[in-house]
Image 1: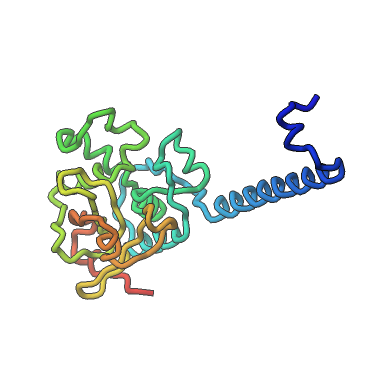
Image 2: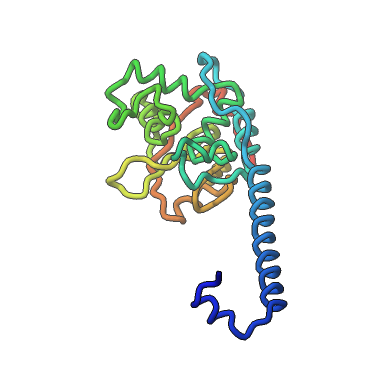
Amino acid sequence: MIHPAIGIAYRGFSCQTLCALHETMMRIVIRFILLGIAFGGVVYAIGYHGQRSFQYPLAVLPEVSNVVKAAKELSGTPYDPLMGAHGNIGATAGFIVCSDVPNLAYGLAGYSLQTMLERDFKVHPNAYNTANGNVPGNPYFHRRARNLFSYFQANGRALPPDAIPKVGDLAFYQHDPKSYVTHVALVTAVEGNRYWVMESAPETVLAKEVSGTSPISRGWLLVGYGRMYQDAHSNSRQAGRP
C-alpha cells in the first residue's frame, strides 16, 4: 500500500516513468559503491603494510644512509586522520602518523626507537609525563612525539631550533609555545644551512620529503632537534639531495 503523501508525489507519473527513475537511481548508487571500493583499494595499495613493531635489543646505530633510504620508501603513504585512535584501525589500512616515520625508518634499518625509549624510561622515569598511562607497555608510548623529545632532553642530546641539523636527526615541533611537542619529522638531507625532512602530517596528506621550512610555513613552531648520531664518523655520512 502506498502512503498517501507518496501517492500525491507520484500522481501524474506513469509506471514506466517510475521504473525508469528507479533504475537510474540504482545505477547511480551502484556507481558510487564501485567508486568507493576502487578508492579504498587504491588507498590500501599505497599504504604501508610492513613491520611496525621493533622490540629487538638495541644494537649499534645503522648506517644513516640506510635510515634515510627506509624513510624515503614511506613516501606516498597516507596520513592517518584518526591519529591511531579507535583501535589503531588506520594502521590496519596502511596509514601512518608523524612519529611512525622515524620509528619505521630506524626500525627497518635495524635500530629500535621503541626499545630505546623503554630502556631510557628505566633510567630517567621522571623525564616523561606519565599521566593517563603514558608509560612503556602502552602501544602508543614510542609513537608519541613528546616522548621521543623527552628522551633527547634527558640524555643531553636535544639541540635548539637555531642549530644546524644533521642527517638522521629528529626535528620536533609544537603548535603553541605553551603546549608539549606534538609533531616530529626525520632529517633526510643537509646542504649548508638548508635541510630536508621526511614528514607525515595532516597538511601533506601523503608522507613526503619536504624542505625543513615547510612545516614552519604551515604554522608549526620548531622546538629543536634530537641528535641520533653523536660521533664525527657517523655525522659525516650526510645524504645529499637526490
